[in-house]
Image (tube, rainbow, N blue to C red; front, side, top):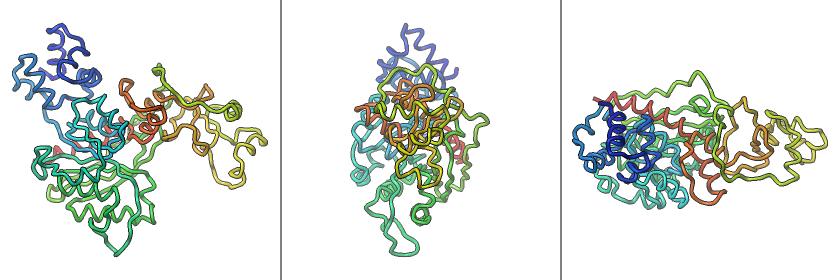
Length: 401
């Protein structure tokens, strides 16, 4: 019997619904819903709880079809977009770390079974994580996370781990060196490719190679992977050298979604508002348009000094149409240089609309005030994008004999 069928049978025979079943095993309804829809799979702790509480043969649960799960540890987890996508791909999250209290609260409320460590990565990197996670060196399948892009002080032609001390990248690399997972995933802004004339990325790669990894990178667009958003990110993948495995980036989907595909029946939520003066400007912009569609006198007044600087600047006074993807969702919905206005209504996207565009499920809750919720969503890796990368990583991990 397949796992999903077994779970349906257990819930039905015990007269439960998804909510009561989730509560009985200290999980969430959202998580159970994902299991029943075969979007993700219970981890071993979940399976053992189900077996014990409902008197099911543990071997039956632990040996169901597609029983193999892969493990990951995530740094700089934020609101969990990357971790959730990896979970949907088949990863069991052993630890998620972030310094932001609201982000950690978001992770805990959505995944109470996850081991969420809310502290600075500097402190985390000093711990004996192998002992805390009950792992052997090299046993972990994946280390994931998106550290900030920072410059390094160049003392020589080829820098090593000791040369990047004091940066967030250093602590990511330090955890990597301790755990020595089979693979690692590092996501970052597209600008990392050319940052400091490419020297920053070259240094990162040299450090990864020094630790013992073959490294490759590629700029991918989330729009190619089931996300209604143009969001280009560099995806750095490392495989431990002695494993001799090859990673292939996921192939783009044939269909690329647009706003009308995702902004249907979106739950009500908080949302930022334009001041009246800005609203009057946006009322003149058609769907798919920007400041170039404004009367010249209005455009000059709105653009101010930017009007005569030349260049595209098509993100200013930008109203997205239903038949295109959103531009990159940002941490603040009202930044003048990067406006994203709703297709029909003269306002920014709400919190839940922004989350939909980032492919978060509607039941994924965000903690903190409205501004912090926007920030968490804007910093996140789109869930569907993360899932596709995760599936490609699992395909590679299966090559290991």
